[in-house]
Image 1 (spheres, rainbow, N blue to C red):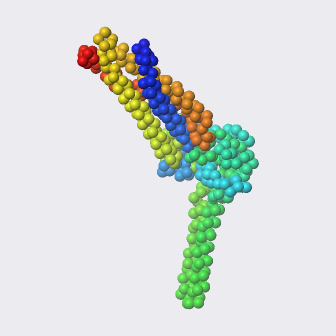
Image 2 (cartoon, rainbow, N blue to C red):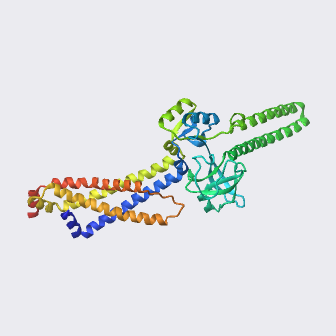
Image 3 (cartoon, rainbow, N blue to C red):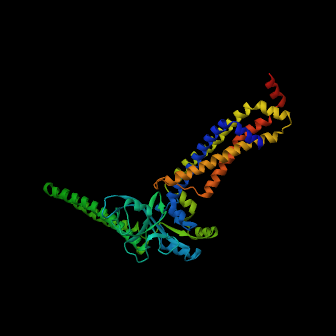
Length: 428
């Protein structure tokens, strides 16, 4: 230890240079790690915040909530296995809303939860909704930056429904979009509104075709009966199409007899109960919370890119240290030879090199952590950043490990130095 510290004090400039490089690299590692964690949480905060362990989705939905539809029958069977209070319905829908007195459009995710259940988030401002709250929702705090306040009326661009904001919640987002929570009553009304919009759209298209058929028939009366007969046949076909379209539009968004349709069923249970659910519900797929998070569109691709950057930064830091200390070791070959000649053991010299690497790594990490915390305090709220103590400790440990691994080549070089060769080269 004495040799390592004394050498660092003697060659301040040399070690200050490598320390500066290590501070920059470790800062970049910590910052990108915090950014990756922040984006991960912002992408799936509402799912991660849930106490659910598993989710029941429709078979072949590719683990995605928006592709799944499950009904009351699946919910009842799930509750029979895991308990009445351990299975809750969940509705998920991506949409665009705008304040009633503004033209601004905001992308949000609608979440249907039963008020008072363990899926319901804690309201931080305003009041929570209940089963009887008609036309009321609670929204994520991010919407406040778009001018939304308690009492603001939000208009759904797809269905035309209007909701009054009654409260705010914190850290609730899905696919980087703030979440709007509504009860089952509003969810059913939203499905009915979607059916009305679909039926109106389909009817409007058919009426346009029917009008074209009428004009063709009128022209046909001027030219001959054959054209008139053709128009009558087309009108009959249009009536059948209208009937079929209405039935189809109803069946795609609601279950038999108007029962509600959900996107998933959130479950609190053990892996054994998950296996029982799979056996009892063969037309569904039982997934874990981690699988549900990974299936969010863009999640794996986003995290994969950032993790690849972090991995390369670790490799770069180890490579920079390895090259630096190897060059220094070569420059000090004669000194190491003299120390060996007077009886210094290889273990002491190797320990001296390793201690220098450890001191530089720890010192650079301390400075980097302070810089990251400083940057975190001034980052805009729109940039998600999250670096918890556990993630910070793991990142620092990995950085030190990679740094020590980079010094192994220099340690190996020290042990291979021959005292006589080193002294002879000095004498020459």
